[in-house]
Image (cartoon, rainbow, N blue to C red; front, side, top):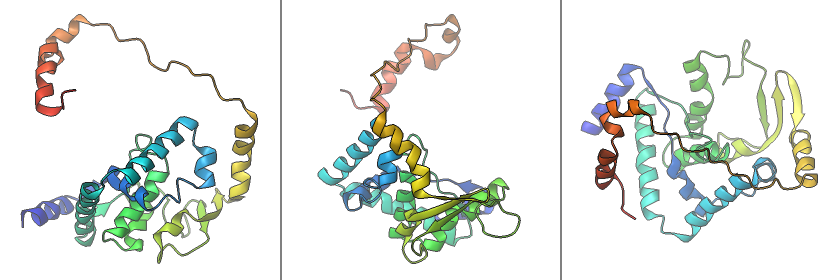
Length: 231
């Protein structure tokens, strides 16, 4: 009862939730269609593609029982919110999670564990547009002429959302090949960039830090016992 009461209160407030289903990466155990997609292989920089492959390896080679249970519980909350009249917006925290791919994995997880494809799609189209009061997310007069033309019906198979054949941007039609071509040529002809140190120099200690008790190194060290595993 408490679980549903909290959701009812949240929905009644009119707030919008943007869940981040990081653990949807567990689905890579059975579904690597996006990881192997030529668009991802072309557009991802090498370091990010390596990170994506590492997530696949983890999903395939470790016990995913707890992750699957966790994902099911997270989506159950989303289902309860949507069915209770609440508003949910697909959230992925990109680029913390894998850019673009995580959006589709979130949608697939939502459908796998309870939402209909239409409900899932609404979290990535109509609902964000309404919340942001921007003319996006719907196909009707007055909306931006930005469209994705798919090769299948996402209302019966949510994976078809990624089956993009053409896109229209501000009324101009593009094919996938035409959009990928400049990047494919660059990838084929450009030498790999030299490794560089992306770490900035440490920020020097400032006397003003002394005014804030949570900056004290003793406090930070002791707090590790409450939140972090000791190496």
